[in-house]
Length: 134
Length: 81
Image 1: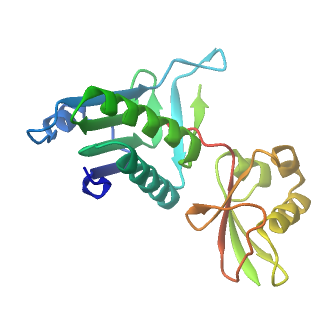
Image 2: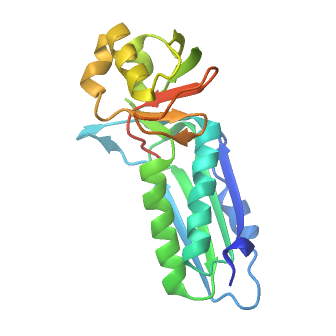
């Protein structure tokens, strides 16, 4: 499969993640046998002290650009049909998700590998920061 | 030449500014601008090695040759997810 055919959908939002709506929006063609989901959830402790929330800040134009570069790398490496990614900014309270990722692929191996790569690269390159709200 | 510099995350607290303007000699590099900013905002010195530098929406190294009107960003290691 050519990498150019991978569909991507990136959302950076201050709104809470609507997981039900996102799941309803899943699209996969007949050749797709694997859909991997990842949810990043705010932990209740930061540097061993309790927190109420994390407040996320993004340099949004650069964040979008860096996500696009990562998506291009994913498309080159694996035969992924689509990636959808939602990252919240602003205040996200403990136990709520800050990150939602969906990867649709023919087989689970490439779906898991692409999802892992995407998140690892995001944590290395995408200009988003968080600060603890106590 | 003149460049616009934006600070993100806790670099805003360290400098007390989210955006500043710097005048530089033609041919100046991003590394030279970083050094100038550390002189102007000494609290940036402790973060010198970990600070990430971008021009526009792309990361650049210290040897990047700046151009008049460049939009430069300085920020700490990223923490998405």
